[in-house]
Image (cartoon, rainbow, N blue to C red):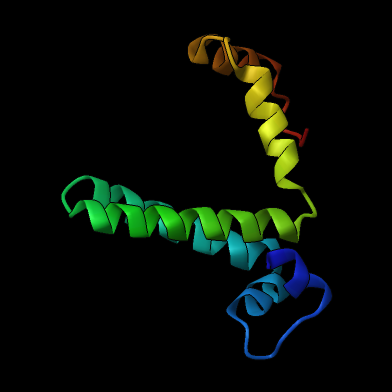
Amino acid sequence: MIASRKVDPSARSYTTKLLAGGPAAAGAKVTEEAEELVRAACGETEDRVVSEAADLLYHTLVLLACRDVPLARVEEELARRFGVSGLDEKAARTAGDTGGSR
C-alpha cells in the first residue's frame, strides 16, 4: 500500500501526506511513535504496546519508502548480523563510523 501511494497518490491518504513531507516528516513520526511505544511498554496494557508497535513499524516503513530503501535491504542487514554478537557488531560500527552515510 505504501509503494502504491507513492506512485498513485490520493489526496485523502495519510500515507500520501507523509510521503509528500519526505524523510523529515516521516522521521518525526518515527521519533514520536518510538517514544510512545517505550512509554506503553513501561506501564500500559499489552494492547497499547501492540498498537504503538504497529504505529512505529508503519511509520518506519513510510520513512524507508521516502528514501526508496526496500524492506528487503533491512532484512538482508539483519540476516548479515545473525550469529554475530550484538556488542561486537555495535563496536565494529562505532569504530568504523566516520560520520557519513553508508
